[in-house]
Image (cartoon, rainbow, N blue to C red):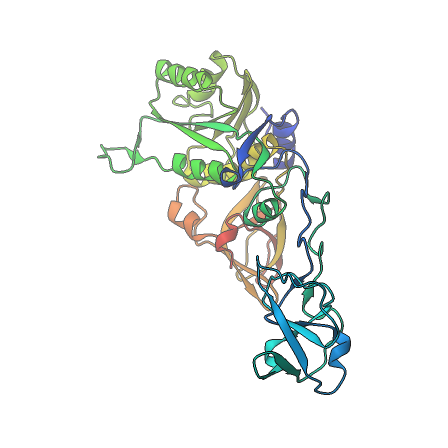
Length: 407
């Protein structure tokens, strides 16, 4: 099978992906979910003209007379508006941040700009423009305004807005369930004793975290040995869970000990492709098993995580009604790079901000088995096929694949 370019592979993976149906969850359960339908405000925010400062509600025109005293006739606090009717000229009302503006008042005089005269009067020490320190009703949004679009990821900002718009529940896309199946006789779980030739399985934990970060629900099916019967049983277990995605880790190539692809085909998988012109991550398998998307990731930890970033993230986003596109940034090289070969290379690197732009240094080794190098890298340098050598100070494109650590 001919190797596919990364862009073509991603296109083929996503072409027939249909978004999942919706479900209703409470606001408390909605963090990290994706909004299914547009959200329109059920109220006006703020619902009244409100003070933005502690001070005195006044008429701006009364502040023009140099130092003329104003009679303080009452108080307005948050949740406790002034109920004495309309305020007259040369009067003031003590007011606190967030409190409703009294009828007749149009400005707030900050308390530090008012001199107390006895118990019931103030002397303004400066004038203010009309409307100063007043939050007008509907200044944030009005009843019926569109506040969130369908497909919006629900984070702390979006959830705060939904709550302010008076939604105790939200209609969201159902979370995609992802079965994760690690394969290989050499694998043991963290903490277990290793026999000669064995290693600790780490990929499943990284992929599970990626699934959760994208709003999905991981289902770890454990480690399956290189045995056709055991693989068949694990695949049937995944099918019985009615998952939207089956992710296999390792064994997707066609070597003597790579049994996953054959087991999947025997179970009924329609294979689309399994070789991509990229490194790390050439042996990536894509297919469909009934209603489940199948993504066979390479066994090397770095290959698995890079492929998960490039292919699993967009798949999970599409299942939740949104697009996930990698945004590449231009960066200056801290070190020279040699010419690239025929596959697109995703080089682990460290990127930082310098002089208003990005600077990047490639990791000392690009071996796809080095988990420590991957964990220390916050960026991927994206080198196109057959790219010429790049000098120190030259420009390259980077993918800030671990944005929280990108500085």
